[in-house]
Length: 336
Image 1 (cartoon, rainbow, N blue to C red):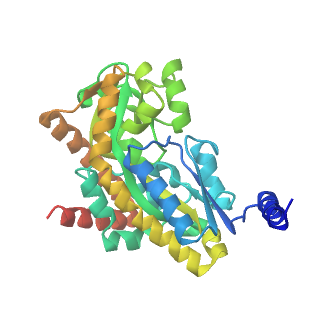
Image 2 (tube, rainbow, N blue to C red):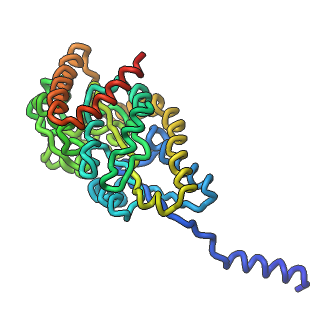
């Protein structure tokens, strides 16, 4: 072997044997929902992962764990509070264990659609308020987003408030603003993690589940609960909650990148809001599901009960009333 060939072979061998450079930090992100290439929330996940890894030049390795891979929602919420998981992205109702202020985002009737919700949640006054949520548990919401309009999936069709009477309904948390309005309609709300909802319907533990269309498709709810009804003024609200210990660990420069990319990824999210919703509605019907939208009269009747119950609940808590006021003011401004 010539000297040149020997040298080339030696370099190749050394390159193959050398381990790849490990990242300085790992950011595990837990989500109960499956990932796909169509819905807005999935677009946020993938854009955030790519943005953080690129701008940090590989110093942060973002690892996505969708579909409940790191455990049920309460376990991942506890994991972020304890610092064993860096980020979790649950439905907002499960974050009240970290800070009861999160429950204000469960209030129905605040948003007209997802674009209106995004404009409201991006209002500077709302972002300033949200930045303080979770402080007592040493966590912080990086972003708060919607993940589709809420739907109730069930075996029997639900075309209005009267059809919810007596229905044992899975809800995404135990907060009053999530459950008491449903109880006022006549339903029997049952707080239940997402992974328990489908088996709950199959076994008769519950009659229906309040979820969203990407989840309904991802977990094949149409096989056991083929009727999906949109709930007026109700949206699946999620938050990417990060451990403040992790932000402190990575230092100010990398922390700035994480925060900036969380906001920047909302551009990819916004681009999928309409097309994603339409795509999943089409899949639902292709899989044999039926989709119901309340008539204007039913919508008005439903929202009247929701709004009255919300006002009764927030009147009992000064902090809740103040937080709701900030959201309501921003929501009204976003309509102008």
